[in-house]
Each structure stands twice: as structure tokens, then as C-alpha cells.
Image 1 (spheres, rainbow, N blue to C red):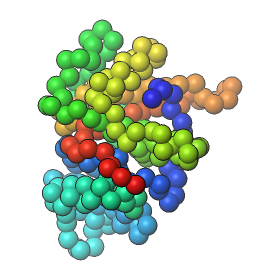
Image 2: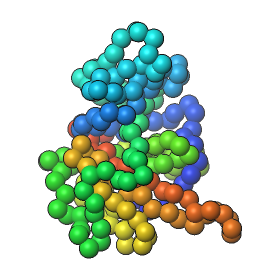
Image 3: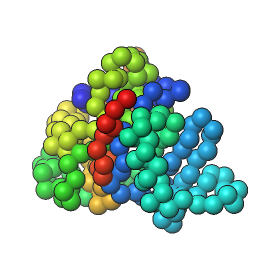
Length: 205
């Protein structure tokens, strides 16, 4: 996958199910049903509806099971959105000099790539679908962790001001700026969040 990032909102309705189930969740992650507008936010280790009308909370186990079903059944009606990092990327800083290969991946072999589109993180193939639906079907739901590290290494090589970090909740973050789309435009901030995944990608359509 090229390090170049498109910047259109994710298509509605969604074409694809969640790319995979995260190996670990983090407070601030979102689980949503876009068709109904229902959203659950993970806080304090539990998934609470937003707004919280007292309808009850979900556990990690329940959200993981729901996402597994969505992946297996090619159900595009459910979404997972990883929490965005703050101004400083969390976790262990990585640079071209320190290298990437010392990252401890705890035996996980795949990752789902999310990219910043507007103010939301969306799976990379959803972003491609906003431009070319046919081409999006050629984008894999997940990539190997070796490919993930190659992408991050390429970004660090090509962008002098790129920042990358790895956090032990199973997220790898990369942020950099690219020139604006037209002369005189402000630079565009690009953010990649690689989420280590605990289950395979979808098995059918």
C-alpha cells in the first residue's frame, strides 16, 4: 500500500464489514451501527452508549463477539473505530535510527490499517472506495505485521518530520504532513493507525 493518503470521507452506506477484530481494545474506541446512529464508547473498560440513556453497557467479550460475527458474515452494518492519539503519539517512539524491528508483537501476525479522513479514522479500503469502488475490493482487509513495518519504514524514509510510535495495547501510530492539494494550501496532516488483530480477515462475501 502506498504511503500516499487520500482524504475523502468514508462512503455511506458502508461497502465493507469491519476489517478484523482488534487483538486488544482501548478506552476511547468506538463501536457503532451507522444505519441506526447507535454508538458505544469504551470507557473504564466497558462499552457505554452515547448518549447514555441507561439502556445498558457492553463488555469487551460482547463487542468482540459482535465484530467477529460481522467479519464472518460480511455485515457492513457495524463499525469499529480506534481512538485517535493526542498531539503526542503514545507508546515507544520509533525513528529511522532506532529502527522498527525491535517491536514486540506478542505473536500477532496481522494488522488492520486505519487512516485519518476528515476528523475520523476509517479503514484504508473504505477510503479508497470513496474514489473507486472496484479498486477498493482489491485492498486487503488486513496486512501482515511485516508489511505494516515496511509501510512505516517507508513513511519514515520519505518524510523527514514523520513521527511513529508503538503502544503496548497493540497499536502502531504514524503521523506526518504532506503538501496541500493546491499551491498555497496548508499542509495536510496524515495519520495511520495500525491495529493488531486477533482474528483473521473476512472469509467470504
